[in-house]
Amino acid sequence: MKIRSGFVSNSSSSSFILFGIKVEDKEYKDLCESFLPKECIDKYIEKYYKDEDKEDIEWCDLWYDNQDETELDVIRCGYGGETWIGKTLADGDDKLEMGDLSFEEMNKMAEEIKKKLPDGECKLYYGTYGC
Image (tube, rainbow, N blue to C red; front, side, top):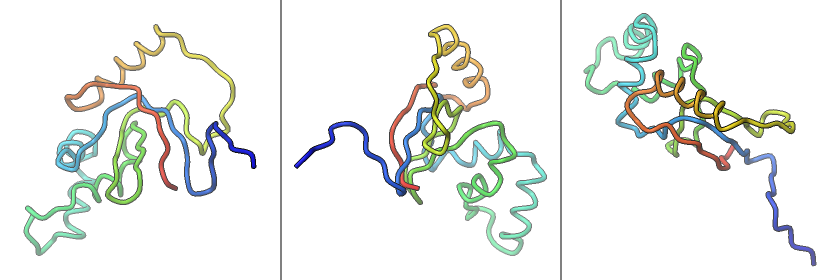
């Protein structure tokens, strides 16, 4: 029997490399208010929370419904799983080609991303998530 020791992928998983931050559930309200146009927020609240308490807004759902309005990439590991936002360097959905990125280029990229993100240390994240 052969045993494969390298990365093995199937249709239910994908690998990624991302510069950014890990997002906690409590941070979605700040993300929405910082990055989404006010009209997106108002439209969402009017549609789903018109007659309800505004304290119960699902900020995570608002973010995912409108994340295309931002310049940030999002990697999420299943519903309720870990989430990262920033700039994706590689994703299993891409046709990954050989390439390189110097430390100087990485530092510049990290500084640009930090300007767009809420307080938090910009890191290089990598891993596999379910599709």
